[in-house]
Amino acid sequence: MVVLAGRISILAALQTLLLAIAWLPLAASALAADEYAIKAAYLYNFAKFVEWPPSAFTGDDAPLHICIINDNPFGDALASLRGKTVGSHAVSVQALPSHSDGSGCHIVFISRSQQPRLKNLLATFGKRPVLTVSDIEDFAQAGGIIGLVEVEQRIHFIVNLAAMRHAGLKLSSQLLKLAIIVDEGN
Image (cartoon, rainbow, N blue to C red):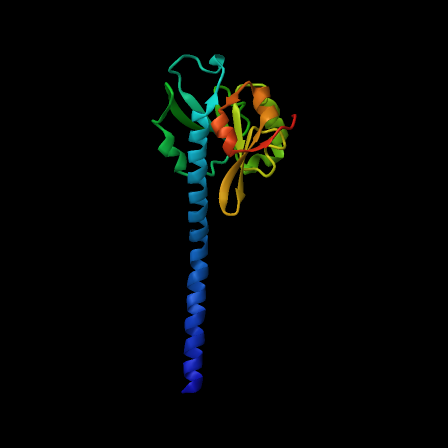
């Protein structure tokens, strides 16, 4: 009987472990969904604290286009931004193919899958009034405007002042107070 009880408890422990392992991908995807919901909120809030030159919009009430290059890691998180406004501009969200030049975009999120093309993408957007944002490691240091980083399980952002000036954008001092600042040339 003792041997049987030991086998049953080992079997029960093994079943519990297998169930826990089976749920890990779901838990990981839920954490990723939460991470990108937070990042989507950041994109919207960045838009409220950026000043674009008048030439960046086709009119006073033209939409503000948030574009995602290639893979969309946000899932449905960006859908909540549709219909919101920034000033007089309705927010538009669109996914672009990796070969797109992002014409008409005001904010471009460059997904991690684009890291091999990062230098070319930054060269494409760098001289236009486009707020470049990414969670690629060292994005701001590489010449992007805003890099999203995780520090102690919180999302923070790094702003490259030189890249911001090069793009002809102005960020609110309120936003800059919350940022980690780098001032590295492109």
